[in-house]
Each structure stands twice: as C-alpha cells, then as structure tokens.
Image (cartoon, rainbow, N blue to C red; front, top):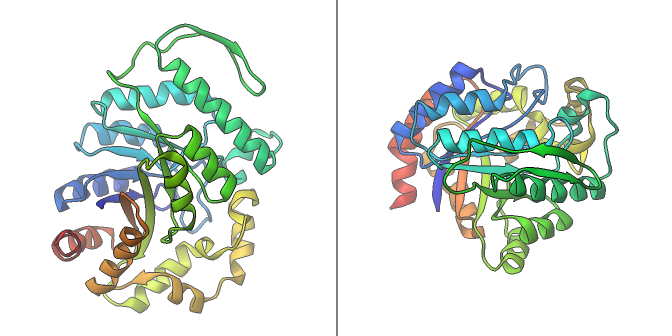
Amino acid sequence: MRIGYFLSTEEYSPAELLEQAVAAERAGFEGLWISDHFHPWNNEQGNSPFVWSVIGAISQATDLRVTTAVTCPMIRTHPAIIAQAAATSAQMLDGKFTLGVGSGEALNEHILGTVWPSADVRLEMLEEAVELIRELWTGEVVTTEGKHYRVDHARIYNLPDTPPDIYVSGFGPKATDLAARIGDGYINTAPDDSLLKVFKDKSGGKPAQAGAKVAYAPTAEEGWEHAHRLWPNAGLPGEMAQVLPTPEHFEQATELVTMDSTRESVVAGNDAAQHVEQIQKYADAGYDELYVANMGPHYAEMISFYGEKVLPDVRG
C-alpha cells in the first residue's frame, strides 16, 4: 500500500500547506491528498484557501501526484469550470493529478443560496457532472443541455496528454455503487472493508484510496486536546456532515462530542507502533493507497516522525 500525506485546507494556511507538501516529499510520502472547501468545519480551524491556487503552487514545488479529496463539481462550482481547473492542474503537474469527486456538503455548497438537494438527487447530479467533465476533456467543442447542466459552445484548450483519472467517493451503498460504475477509482475514510469490498467486486478491482487523521504531539494527551479542539466534527454520526450548513452549526453539534470519544477514536502522540497499527488496518481492509493528515500545530514534527519511524516500518 502506498502512503501519502493529506493536506487539510480547513486547518492550515496556503503557506503552511505548501510547506507540508515539500516536507512530505522529502520525508518519503508518495503522494498528496488535498481537501476542497469553501468553509472550514468550525471557526477554530480557521482556514479555507482556494484549492486550485494551492495546487498550482504545489505543482512548482514538488513532483508528487496530487488528488483532490474531494471536489464537489455540482453546485458551488459548475462542472465545466472544474473540468478546466482539473485539466490545467494536470498539465502543470505533468499528468500527476487525480480528480477526486463527491456529492458535497451543505457547508460548502449552500453559499450561493441554492436549495440543498436530497442525497439521491446529488448522486444524479454527480453522475451527469462527471460525464460532462469527461466530454470536455476530449478537447472538442461541447454544446449540451442535460437535466442539471447546460453548456454552450465550450472548449478546453489546455489539456494534459492523457485525461486525469476520476476517483469517486462513496460513504454509503448508493454512492459506492455509483463509484464502481463511473469512477476510475474509489475514495473513503473508513478502515474497514464493508463498502470497499462492494466497490472492488462491482468495479472489477479498480484502485481505492483512503484518508486518515492523526494528532502527533510530544504526548498523547496533548494530541487528543488538539484533535478535540480542532476536529470534533469527526465524531459526528450519520449524515450530519452533509447537511449542516455553517461552521456555527457544526460548533453547536460538536458540543455533544466528548473528550473520551476523541481519545477512543484518534491516534495521538508519538508512539510509532500506534501509528503503524492504524496504517495496517487500512492495508488489511484492502486499500491501495492511504493518505495521512496531521491535526494540530506539530505538522513539521509529524512529517519528520513518519519519515524516520513510521514509513520505514510500514514498508518493511
């Protein structure tokens, strides 16, 4: 299993993200994930730079493959614009770019005042968006009117030699079925094989990526404090992450997330064995790639720690 680094745009500034990308390559990480948000999950995280600008900077600073994890190409941004942004990114990265897509969260997509669709409608929109993006990547002039999207005489002039792969996230059965049907690969965050096995079986074994978070710190207790302060939203159940519309709503909801639940769910501190154990869970589940994010201020130490003590152990 390949191990990459996950850049959290919700928590870190553009300069910090670029610093992390360069350090991750130096430490031996094999790729980069980067989130695509308009808002952070809560105000404590305090960041949310425009992902395409950051990707452009990364393309000039590292040679690592970059995957968006994930972009919603449907509501806040029209799929034709995502097609152009992704094509430019792939060209700047010499083809080392994967467009990860998903059906989005109200947190980011409600900002233009549009109605937040139901999950079934969002999946329908996502399928049409992916089809339109691929059509635009042919370099031909596209004029079309679908159920959800209209394009009038649109052509993308800057294209990579080979169109990027499109990986589709799936956190439920319907989304996973869609990923298997239309995706070049799959994205999830759960270290189990329940949905992953469905995807692998229905897709004929296409590749799958996962993301995980850790809170590196001199002690586990400090790490848990950072995780609980910055990322309590990770402890919210069900579909809350998709339907809550503002950082303030997330702050209200996460008052119910206890420190004990954070301790139980987050790998924290500097015990290499625990970090390796978490990675192994994803490998055992059958993922082909795992991208690890840090929570808290000790990202430089975390990246060095992984390069020196975790990645060599995982790779044997």
